[in-house]
Length: 424
Ligand code: UD1
Image 1 (cartoon, rainbow, N blue to C red):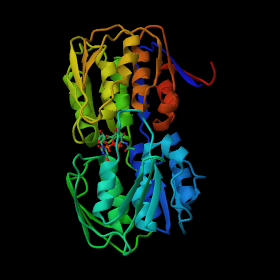
Image 2: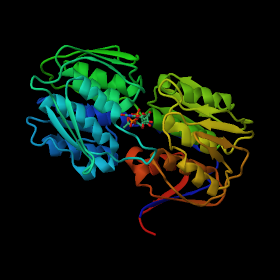
Image 3: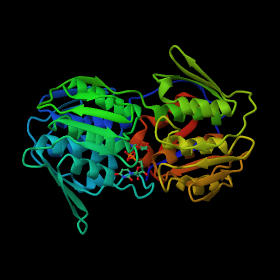
Image 4: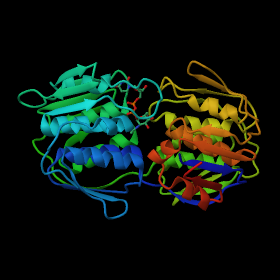
């Protein structure tokens, strides 16, 4: 199994270019099934999750040309299957994003239960609530763990849907399904993440009539048909946050290019509370932690525009190294502290109770053998390894490769002592 070896690297320094956002690209790719025309998605990062999504779409009947780096051309002239592949779905929860568009385009979708990061139960009830509200019938086969969703005889029909939690995936799925529904759909308590706006922008380019994406009430006037378009994905705000923390934890300085400051406001604010220098420049975000007395702060994850749950573990790794106690509260996912055990192997001494982690801070971390327990936790372990004494060996790095493009290469270019090894 491949591993990442990382040694204490001293202050990282240099420039990094942020890739297109994984969490934007996956739904953008899924949305292309809504039309028989050709769609071109640009700014696509080279990631394992993107490969899974391409395979999902090909199984449905998509023709994909990805010969140009960072660009995927997709055309689905005809849907040849409405069944999600179990292995692919279990590999990646975002495979679910194909349900809404398949239902809208084909009238039916059969989906095995999803997998993905092991961060709590992650039900799909809100997705299904949305499909039911649009008049679809939902049949859950508990024994075989398969969900079948079938549109009514006259297709989907718009309605008002209230999400009990502003789920990103449910908002995206319902949004895509609603574009081809009859009449008006209103999604209340919708997620407001930048990736939702990016998806709505793509759909509107395809001819959809979506208003107020990015607010908690999205309005969709259904249309009969969507057409092809060209669209470039937004930069990855979680990758941006990860490199901001790389500068912070190594007490280095990094110029982060192709980042949208408005998408990472809570991360900038929290780093500034810790006395890390964060400057928004015309061409990027400059993070400088050199020679500063850093102090602790508390973190509470929330749906956007609150502090992102995906940056909770990298931020926690950083907090272990600054003076003073911190409390980290995870409110979005029920079990997203698996990295705590791994950070504790390195001497972090973090104590968790329910959804709260108490970080004593002021630790000199020591290199250890640790696991990437999920995608972002994997990044957190590498960050911890950069600051720890000795060597840190991170296993299960397929999680990292699911969501970070050229992870090791980008860190090396900043001066990190890091390498990937393919065998024991
Ligand atoms: C997306 C992101 C993920 C991020 C998360 C929260 C992608 C590919 N992934 O995941 O990186 O961590 O948003 O910002 O975009 N929930 C329900 N019922 C549902 C759906 C969700 O109870 O039907 C709950 C989940 O269990 C979780 C919370 O809602 O506790 C947030 O989940 P959601 O916003 O749906 O996350 P994802 O779309 O899976």
